[in-house]
Length: 70
Image 1 (cartoon, one colour):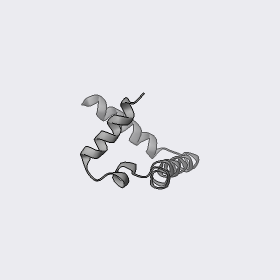
Image 2 (cartoon, one colour):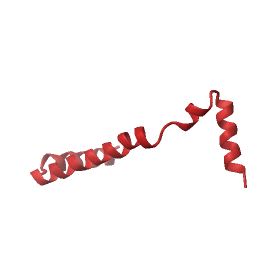
Image 3 (spheres, helix red, strand yellow):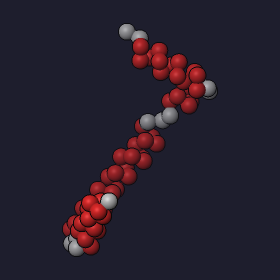
Image 4 (cartoon, one colour):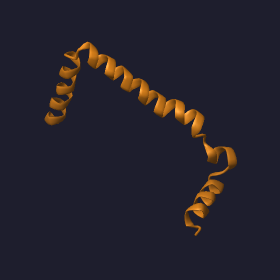
């Protein structure tokens, strides 16, 4: 537990002493992560199974058949 606390304090101290360029870079990183995980998920990876099947049994049968076919 003491090691985790030291690691946490290390990062907190680092973010307190960050310069303006570092802040801009972290903002860019946050925007890119938001785009990758939220925007792309919504528009390019729809929930296929929920739109095609109604029950969990139908979904599991579909997945099983696709994984095991030659």
